[in-house]
Length: 330
Image (cartoon, rainbow, N blue to C red; front, top):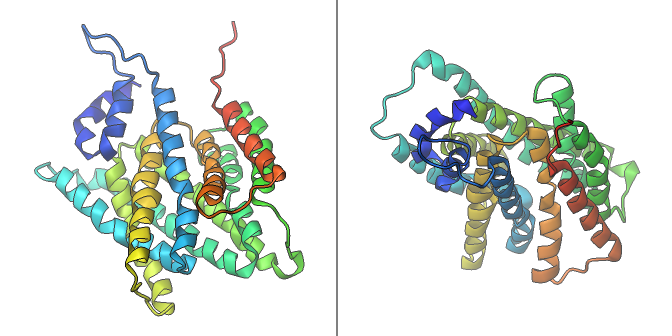
């Protein structure tokens, strides 16, 4: 990772030092031994941690009692000032980047913010236009779209192992979510919207990967995405009457949603994307419905059937298969 050594100078802007740690695992300094932890394994651990944090979001949203689009707005709106203040503090005293050099990053950052906000808006429309199971299943098809982006040259080409693991991962997700009560006749528009949401999130991951490859730090990326998403979701929030929760319990749950669902969850994913292929990352993030199902069983008392448990096993097996390093042929 020869280009990563220079990024050590910017480690003050990296999320919780995680990016600095990942970079340092692959840097050999004269007279110092290399850290034994492989950077890929460390990045994989960071990605899994981010996915686990993101998996708490559906459970917290359900516990708030707020409509999903309202909780989505508060999720980014409350995180935006945190990321923005963090980014400004980290950049204090540093010379600004050349304007010409910053234009591609600014364009990509704006695109990332648009894709993230559009994913949230379209996903919530899909939930209302079809049943939750179908909407959740199709929005988790992001790895499929990331694979397509790789095939047409918009992202790194997926490995053969990714394509081997993808069917099992999506099948496991389908079993976990369950399709009981599906009404195909009345949910065509909602199903199409849910697929679009999956494509939008796949596009978001692809753009964030490109940003990280160009040296953008996680804090700056997440600050721009959170601020941009807040502005883009504001009309939807206004159409809902701009409700303000009046219960302390709801505000505490929103704080948990912001912390785990946005600041730590999305932040760790952004950190890991610099060091892992985007196709593998999108597949690993299917751990989110697994975490949501287990937490719903523990915290909300929801039942977990044998079929759903087998779906969890399929998803985890697929992630393990995709994450296995390819042994070089002799």
